[in-house]
Image: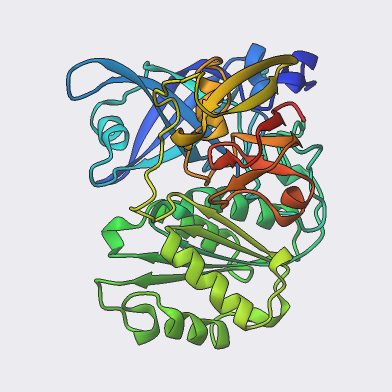
Length: 405
């Protein structure tokens, strides 16, 4: 399948309206949603296992006024293309306490519904051996590949370990299936933490993987509120337990890549433990669903700012889709570049606005900024001048960024 030229140009982040093909219940609090992708749009939705999509809907606020809500969810299946050229994208949505979108989706979403879905993005992909990365886009290795059957490709054999908690299993499912199918010499270990068996997402699919690859796929369930036969697999996954697992159940010294996915606290714990063991950070991939920082409110993009032209202002210039715009931002407002850009261009790309997803990535062309948080950009991207505009505020009188860069 070829990728349309306009799709390549717009792959940075473009929304299209897709129809919900199916909704499957995974647990009491989680569903799998399958979006049908017509042949005419398939080129926009090629992806690598581990990437995510952003969903966009209009939802009423407390006063009943509709406003835009965006949420990002990882793709949980390997790419597939049907005989008619169409394809599909599957995501898992777990209901969060107080999460209005996830609660609505788990209660109301059904086949036949339509929703705006962003083209896949994300750097939580395997970079070992036969990587498919064809370019960097939106702060990620955003692949514009036409290979919708990764199981048919040959990868280098490798040893992989994933540590996930709760809905962090979502991208890991796609990664595990793809990597295990890619080479008969590949081994994949998964440490999966949950409260209890009833909370385990993709329980049957994980069992099927174990049956299909009994010698190459090792599954370690750790349940915090359910007693297991092995004490090591019971209780909260802390540093001591993780160290014990790495010293016994997992051969941690010859791992080609590590995949960490879950809440901030777990991912940071795992990174600290691996760093203490001397694991090269280039071998560690991680993805957060939230920053876990209640003192850092997310999603402030688009807040109103009153520009007082008689006062001190920053001049922010940005380029998007070849068009350049200037905005004045009051110095006292401490406005992010993304927020300023959204005031004149509502199509500026973003998803989480919390420094986690990387959708709002842009190249800093002129001036300097202070980037408050960064959970999405790789060190080499930062060195090459890329910033997360949702977290970046000007520190010079004039700042220029390029979303097309």
